[in-house]
Length: 403
Image (tube, rainbow, N blue to C red; front, top):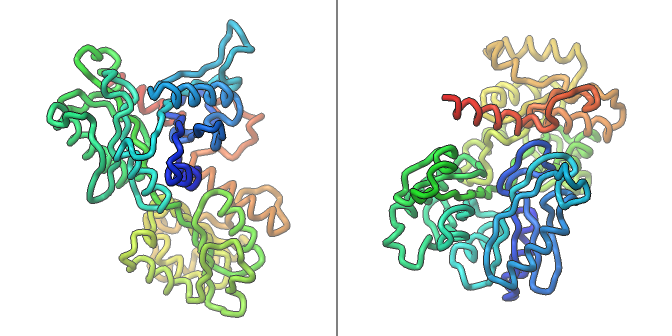
């Protein structure tokens, strides 16, 4: 929902009713991740996507029906072997979509959640997608310090459940996670296996969507290659900062696509970010650092710090010779072999890239592969699942069920 938040906020502010269809579960080669959303307003305008085209028409109609009926619905889409022309996913995956009608002012949690998402304030929306009919669609919006909404018109009957849902959603928000949460009516956690066999005991499933600020990409070195990396970083959804100690190169005119351009020594800027009390300045496991200066006086003090941080990716540009010399200097300043092994250098996958734009594609490809667990081979050369991160999730589930 985050990628369509501005339009949802505009509809909400104008008092226009709408319905949001959210991907809440995927398996196989489903095209979109949980949290992907399509919304339709009362006038029939549609924004967003849940499948990249396979089932958009059917989901659009579900949204229109939900607006008319005021009732939420959970629908599953999969490929039909009996009728290849039936509504479903041509890729063979399975997609669970939850459709919820929204009337501005009618639900405190959804009102607050849409406002928080549009403003960039971290928030988790916990919505009941399976369970007793009276609770279907019930929502709480959870921030670090408070929550909005209630799971029932008579909260005392579900007080323990609400407390547990808020606590679990807040923990997922802290970790930046989106996914399903299964609880009993008394608030006790259940495993997904329990919920499948214990519905008569009142188990219900929440879909918790964590909305956090965009992940950060820090590009050090205001060179021509950096401009292309900035553009592709924005395309991938990062909040991109360019930093260079040379004011003649680090200018907004040279990097119009960057969210900010900073004139400072790279290591000093990194130190300032780590010391900042602003949560948006913080670096986390989603953060990407691209060191493109390939100049030891900039690289070494910067990498000495960066390779000890719990960030998702640290890469550095340079030749094979530069890489070996850089590693030797990093050992001299005290980094261990394990810390140095985190450095992706020379940065980027071997695509034969020459131009800045081609090099940016190679860099982006390595970042995506690192984040998603890709094997970096042509898809045509393999036989396994296309989505490696989903494969790991399914393996984890199988292991938990076997235990």
